[in-house]
Image (tube, rainbow, N blue to C red):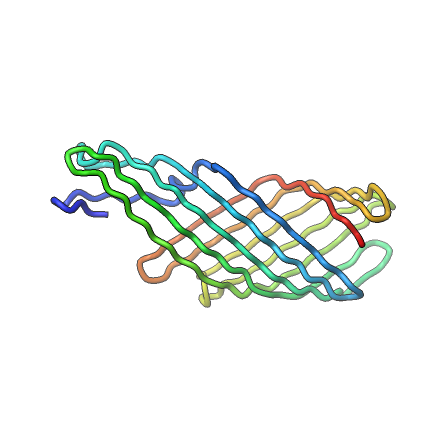
Length: 205
């Protein structure tokens, strides 16, 4: 960004912008019938972080606030199923929307705010495996890759959970999830890595 009264400029990477999470939520609804599974994924992030502002006092400080929404729809088909577990293969789409507001606090130059939004949809191919350890315990691993230049240059996701069957219709899970995005089109470049623990409850109807 360049100041309106001169050549002061600075850049802020998404590593700065994504430093602090103000609010986030995530849901992974999963419907299965026979050999077909439909997995949907909805994630919302609201992040805010101070960013460095070089320029010898042109601005006294800066902050970036980013909202992001991710929505996926994945179809999986069971290619192997037995007493030890099952393997599913498939694919689908993942959509992203980012809106960033960058604020510069007044210094030698007046304060200013600038907004930018971008969105895209990635095709993805997916695989999921379930390993049954006992009548109640199992391990689940999921992974997908996509983008291929259609939306992002490349994206991948992986998560693994330990699952416990509480009752015939209720189970609980805990694990870890990773997401990577490499998006570069026009003047927009987003290189983002996110990871963290996940916990959940599964209801079978």
